[in-house]
Length: 277
Image (cartoon, rainbow, N blue to C red):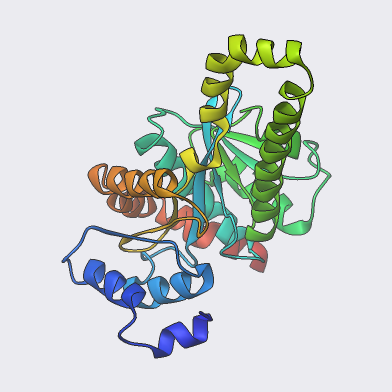
């Protein structure tokens, strides 16, 4: 369903579920429907938290050090420096409350770690977050190969770059899985080796399985809305439900609101006033 069509159909299950959250009849909504339609309805019905210009799609990702959260993953193809600064703040709250990290580090995805590299938007965001962004642990720029290395706990980027990076990582997992399956079927010794290594491979597979990390919340809305992958199975949808339950139990939306109030002057006016000078 196209976003425009979803807005016209007032009796759709997606709209009714989101309205239930807006009316306080439910604490969260989880949907595997069209992302554009879901985002459009959620933004219109639930509205954004005061101080947030646009919601961002966030999702935990596996890393060499455990888990990180990455945002935006496709809601905003083009972002301003204000948007990225707001994403950094929301991602920090998510990492504290859902990943249980006391002081999560934040990295800004770029084409290099050096300050002269990058476009004007990421450079301005870096300057702002370094000087007065209100973050306790801003790392600076990171490159694409540092995402899964777990160099930072929160990876901030625009929706275009984030979506491409996420889909590339998921495709890499599928490629490795395919190569392993082909390798273990290649000979009798390989099949015997698989029998011995199966428990270890099972544990690795669970850690890397995209279904385990299914469930991407629209951070920045006044209510909890979680997007599930449309092609997932029961296990994957269960993961999305868990994200919604954890967000409701940890009151992530309220903590984002409180964090914005604490840093209102910086997040809301810091970048804009600087750009006018």
